[in-house]
Amino acid sequence: MPFINDILGYDSLSIVGLEKNTGKTECLKYVLERLPIGTTRVAVTSIGIDGEAVDQVTRTQKPEIVLREGMYFATSETHYRQRKLVSELLDVSNETTSLGRVVTAKALTAGKIMLSGPSSGSSLKRWMEQTHDLGINLTIIDGALSRLSSASPAVSQSMILATGAAYSANINTLVQKTAYVVHLINLEKTNEKNLSMLMSIEKGIWSIDNEGKLKNLNTATSLSQQIHLEGLENCSVLYVAGALVDSFLEKVRRDKHLRNVEIVVRDFTKVFVTPQVFNQFVNAGGRISVLQKSKLIAVTVNPTSPSGYILDSSVLCGRLQEAINLPVYDLLKN
Image (cartoon, rainbow, N blue to C red):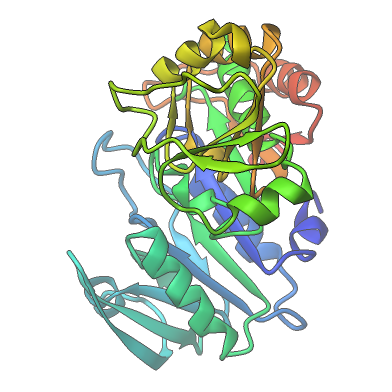
């Protein structure tokens, strides 16, 4: 079965859609139906809301989530009361979401469930740590619309990316946009020396010179209008703890002393740079690397958009696979 065995090599998986209706829930369903739960203890949750029968925005039909007997799950109090399965209540969190507290339970029978679990990356990490006490081997996180943070390596070890006609109805554009996201996910880790110096720093912009000396540039974020890069003639590394944006990257590229600099970010979810600016920076001699990297296991496609536009699945899968050098699946077709 495509990529199921690959998933079992990690203790956590995020399934993230690049847009609504790109097949994220269909992918989650596919995975849940095929995991060997006789030998693997699985817990599943969502950082948004998933499992509705009808999409609240497009009013189109959506695949419902069915859990198998023995699977663990986390959802809000509201959706726990609406479950269509028998379950054992294991924990009620002290953290409150807009839909109530987060409930952790075990499915005693197979049945349908709506998932709406921890709503932030930090609360999600706390819940995942709690599942270890339950002997969970694999935690699956259903990502929310445009919130790739759930796929951060700080949260999950591996991920599956869902794309499709809802992201772009033009195959060329769809392939280009998806390939760029895949490229960001696959950014290389920086070297061990940089990792040891930077991993504990969670704020600001810092430099490392050619002699390995670390310096705080006293700038809160790359969004700041007052970024001073003077005196960095011997700089080999710039570390941006927060978001990396176009304006900062352009400023670095235009500085002749920083042409071959390595910019380090925590992980790919911190990169908010357009492909054009990214490529200009790299082509001028710069490099962007990460402190943490997750494994992209596969890309799935939904060739149908909510408006009814249908792309040629075989052409789309072939073009995308060629562009990203990774397995690409149309799960409904397969």
